[in-house]
Image (cartoon, rainbow, N blue to C red; front, side):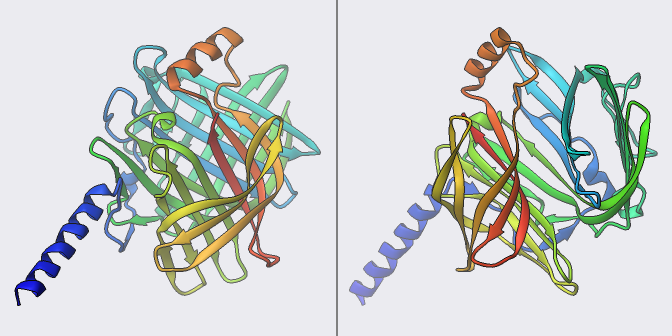
Length: 352
């Protein structure tokens, strides 16, 4: 009897130590459908809080739109700012990029229309509740002699969701909030360059993430993917903690036309790498899920490489990179899942 009690006590201690050593604390596993208020900017949580609403649109003409509205706090070096970053890929065979940044004091969120504009005097905004089928993004600005005018409506999107309350705890002090507002939607609208307006249709996705610290201090890499399937859609967003690479943050989701399923990654293993412009990036990863399943992603088509610091001059870039402890590089393209013909669109971010 005494020996049995000792064994039980030892198992309890081992379990307690194992739990205490876990850096990532995940929310409850149930699926929670989002409310309109979840689209709003959160209250600032810390001097380095950042938040972004990221859209990915795949047009029927073969072009893609990546558009991110962001809120960033860089205490001690750049202050607080909002930004809108656009990548228009393969538009009539050309790629276009433009970014705009404003004082965070200029950002306005209108409670009645759910419109968030980065600056009331500029035309960079989104508006409308996704659940009401009237969500729209608008981006109008000029750069290098080109006037960009883009308006996309999200037509009948699937209801947004998250896991539990959507909050992943990172150690004792930080957290990541993750919300999939538009897991899949048909889209329509127009894209105009220098008033040459083209009506467009396609599909689109949007996720909303906040972090209570600078990403370069929390994570070493992240992976996002999405695609339309024969009967539904699938996607996911995973992040690998900087000091705890054997753990992972985020979830994948799968909808087969009837049921929605979420999976948490246990860890992510890089199986192979390739060199892109002097940087070795993952070309093959294995996502090992907590339920014992796994998926391999082979990134075989890189369509874009950008840096969060591309818009800065050389000296400012050096200062900011030193302060942040690196810069975030994004690689976007397509990947193959396993040994199948199943392909997804992906976005890798790495800390350089």
